[in-house]
Length: 247
Ligand code: ADE
Image (cartoon, rainbow, N blue to C red; front, side, top):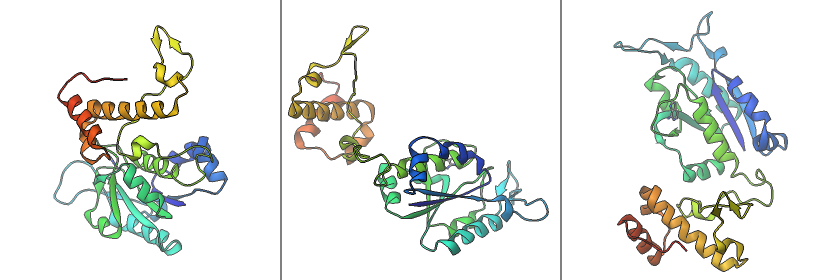
């Protein structure tokens, strides 16, 4: 897949792009990241990209001209790219949106700095996403989150053995507890079932733990989770504060 990133800070991405799994995906040609420096699209001798807000108020606003020129520059080279604005006002970015983006083939992530975008920029984008209900200093860190979550779903990026979508997360649940060696650490023991070698019991334990954990930590996820009648009842009991068999 191709990801174009429109940004005033292309350097933000260069270090991380050379590292780790994403670095390998780029070298292997599975993911192509095209950093589009917004500065040359700025106006005047000083290549200005922001200005004071009409009507007054604190902070600066991204000017429409430079951002839209950069978007059109990308679209001329890659007509089918999906242009996504990073903004706290966008639709919430989640695993489902990552899956949608991974299937898109080409994305253009538009990062802003300063206090916001001129409203007219929105008309030139296809989508807007937010990575959470907080305000970052700019869209770059948000774009990086989108790149990581999306790229790991591209076939081959995690290597052949690894499955990018854990079963519990794709069912809309939090992941079950994981353990590795040693069997006992400072008096805390690995649950016996995980040492039993009994795959059916292990899978059932993990599924039950995922349901219990989601009910305790993220009850908001339960409504859309893919649960059996029995699992729904288990979740309801956890929500009511009843003691349940943890296995
Ligand atoms: N830019 C600033 N804050 C952001 C957020 N929470 N999500 C996406 N883009 C942003």
